[in-house]
Image 1 (cartoon, helix red, strand yellow):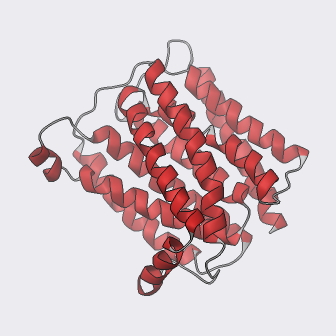
Image 2: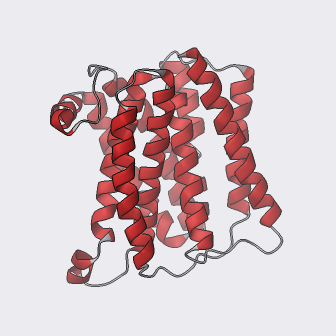
Length: 278
C-alpha cells in the first residue's frame, strides 16, 4: 500500500504543476475556442504550439504513469484521494504565479476539500479484485458521449460558470480514466486489444484534458480545478465501493461519509465565490 500511496502523492505534485503550465498555454489560445468538431483540430494545433502546454502534457503523462501504479495497487477512493492533493499545489502556485487571489473563506474551503479527501484516504480498506464488468464498461462509453455533448454546450459560453461546468465535466472524464485503468485485466497483447477499456482509457483522458484546457481559458485556475478534482475523486470512489467491492475500514463509514461531505461543501464554496469574481 505504501508504494501505491507514494505513487499517488508523487503524481499529485506533477499534476498540480501541470495545471499551472496548462493554464499558461491555454490562455494564449483565443478564448472563443469551443468543443466544436469543426474547430477542434485547429484548437488542438494552437495548443500544441505553446511550449508551456507541451510541458504540461509531458508532466501529465508522467503523472499518469505514477497514477496508474496507484490505481492498480490501491482502492479507487484512496488512489484518487492521493491525487486530489494536487489541488493544494495548484492553489499555492496559482496565487503566486497566476494572480489568483483567494479569500480566507476560500482557503478554508481548499483545506476542507483536502481534509475531506484525507478522511476518505484513512477510511480505505482493501482494494477489490479487478475484473471485467460489461455494464460498467457500457456506462463509461455512454458517459463519454454525454460528457462530450455537454462540454460542447458549456464551451459556447465565456461566463465564469462555464469554467466550473467544464472543470466538472473534465473531472468526470478523468474519472473514466481511473475506472478504465482499474478494469484493465492483466493478459496478452491480443486480449488487451480486444478490451473496450483499452480504448476508453485514452479517449477519456484526451477528452478531459481538452475540457480542462477550455475551462482554464475562461476563469481562474482554482475555479476550473476544484470541481475537476472533486468529481475525479468522488466518482471513482463511489464506483469502487459500490460496484468493484473496494472495502471501507471496519468502523470508518462515518469518516468516509464526513470526508465526502467536506469535499463537496468545500468545492461548492469555491465554485460559488470564484464564479462571482468572474
